[in-house]
Length: 142
Image (tube, rainbow, N blue to C red; front, side, top):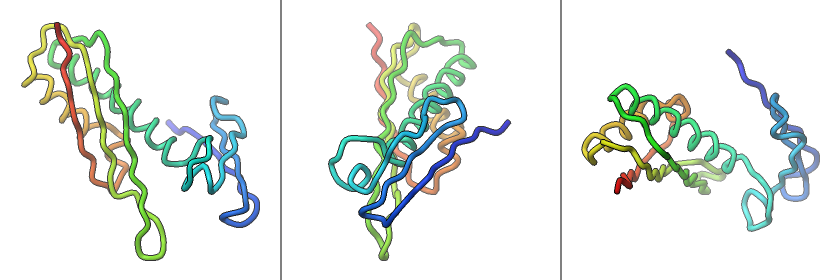
């Protein structure tokens, strides 16, 4: 199964601009540029999209791993913090931190931590990155 996305860029790195689109149409010629990526301008950028992909993939993977352990989550909320930094005359993404909070009836913290680590390791997007991926997992049961 393949999924497709495309990007178009015009101009130089600092004064140019581009658009990004996805096969589903969720992203349809969505603009991006240098200031949206490396400064504080509003708009999307590749790191934001990577974070969205990782957070959503991890949440689904955690649901799978919990289900295999006999649990069903009421809610799984994941945030991904993608760090980009300058190095050797270029840029790299050295780390991504996943922060997940979930409500999982019947699960104790040990089972939840084990499931979260398993999901981090098994998530297809996690396997894609050559970056250090860290995780904070909070179980919010009443």
